[in-house]
Image (spheres, rainbow, N blue to C red):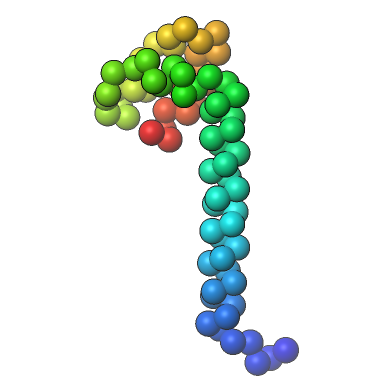
Length: 73
């Protein structure tokens, strides 16, 4: 057990990080779809992330979703 191959440990660690990141990205995309975030954002004009955070909700009864998710764009 003392003869760990550091390159293999690092490779495994990177692979696990990639798997977890991919899983979280899928989860966030699913939540965005279910809450209507993408439909709201599709109606907005192109803008910087600073500008997007000041937009009022448009056509979404859960307007707070856009505000909380605006940092992903």
